Length: 81
Image (cartoon, rainbow, N blue to C red; front, top):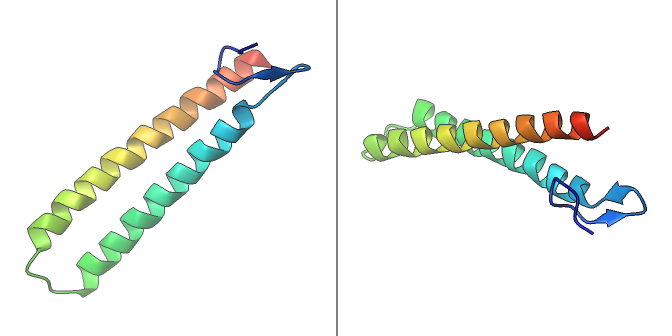
């Protein structure tokens, strides 16, 4: 049986916690990648600076996306409980 959050119910519990952890890991990974890129941009004079700025924007967008997903999941989880 599927629950509202897409997890499979097992005696009142769902496997949604696995996807919940995955969202948190994705936020952490996006933050780490963004931080590393910003460090490279700060200390390295590189000919590909424009490309790095575009990559930074992409990573910021990705981070914002996963933070929003995580926030919606938190709200949904609170409603279920």
